Image (cartoon, rainbow over all chains, first blue to last red; front, side):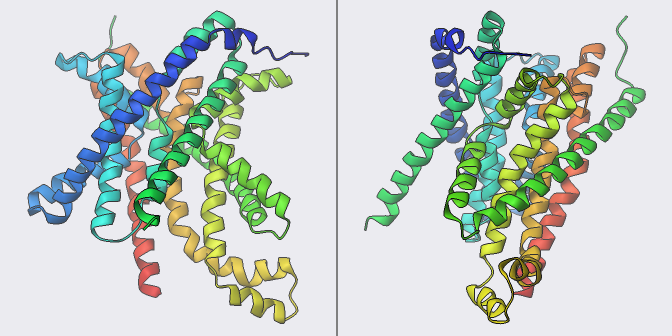
Amino acid sequence: MRYGLQFRDVFAAWESLLGGVYITLLLSAFAMLGGLTIGIICAAARVYGPRWLKGIAAGYVEIIRNTPLLVQLFLIFFGLPSFGIRLDGLTAAILALVINLGAYAAEIVRAGFEAVPKAQIEAGHSLGLSGLQFHAASIIQSRTFRDFEVYTVIGVLYLGLAFAFRGLFAGVYFWVFARR
Amino acid sequence: MIRTFSSIDVMYLVAAARWTLALTATAFCGSALLGLVLAIARISPIAPLRWLVAAYIYVVQGTPLLVWLFVIFFGLPLLGVSVNPWLAAAIAFSVYGSAFLGEIWRGALISIARTQWEAAASLGMSMSQQLRYIIIPQSVRIAIPPTVGFLVQLIKNTSLAATIGLVELTREGQLTAAGTYMPFAVFTTVACIYFVMCFPLTQWSRSLERKLDVAR
């Protein structure tokens, strides 16, 4: 079967893709801020808190770290309406990401508190997955029927974001730690 | 008629966890084979090979697994291979896993002291003999705890295969939730099953880490 790659239709929908990038950045920013806040509180509770608080924080971290993010997302988005709590997609996504990242951040910060570097690989993983970009993607895809091209472009977009943020954080690191 | 979420549904979910485990096993085998090659290529004396592998790892780690899953799922038919969620998932998870295992194992390999290489070389061993008899046996001990930790990541990430229609634990959960209209109970059960699979591994990885520290 011959198949010519056609990216024209995909790039024609660049506005949707750009909107998706914006949502991804928004989700990442919220997840990092919220996650780090929860993480610091949890880590402090685990290292310095009373016994019962330690138990709660440890339970939270273990439950979140041993279940998939996708299932947590489903539980919040599809499960909570059973209790009358209806969240729109964006709110549910932010909530799930904050709760998820909070557990990983708690481990990282705790490690910092205890001066043992670990759980870094897992933390990296937890940042790799985010994005309502797929929502935008599914819209473009249904308009263009160019699934492969759409997801290739999205992959490159993510790579660009990852590249930019690695550079940014390397710069921050250099600025804060290495310059003196 | 809407059926209720009963013990039989829980049994179905537990049965579906088999496919999660099967996918994890397949993905881990693929990742391990490819990852070993990548790890060794990363420390090879041939510079262009090192750069090529570094670029591969950079690209794979810099893009979400979900995108890989979609690119391969929608890309395979373009190469004339029929759309098969299993094949697509196995390839995507192997590509993803190899990049991470490659880096983990590279770390284990380069953590062995330079003098070990030199000692082996002075005994007249070739590069492959040095690796096989001296370096790899020592680095395996260091590599095991993070590898088990990665296995937990892999189990959890196989849930993404639900998005391309592979009926594993998460997809079965979606189907059950749609049939019973009790998503909270269903997804809580699903989460519990994942927890039962992952938690022992997490603890194992942690205890291995501790043992290794004591041994040093």
